[in-house]
Image (cartoon, rainbow, N blue to C red; front, top):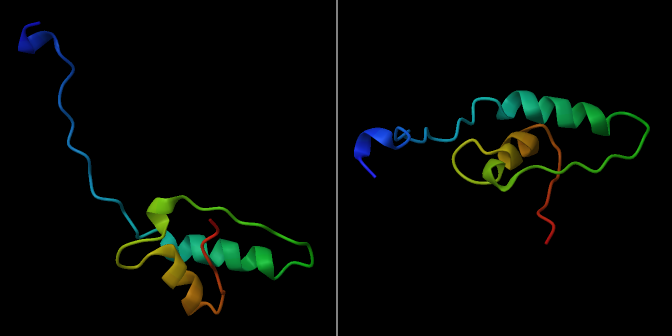
Length: 67
């Protein structure tokens, strides 16, 4: 197949963690309600600088990974 008929190559952009503080605020607000909540996040939010688990810890929310 000639190169021109293939789909263009798209470079993946690095994961953006600038939304983690807002996500942590929203999750924290769930836990301040009288109902019970179970929150699931994708694995990409657990690693790297400024990850969501760290943002939650800064708000006093204890989170742990469930296997």
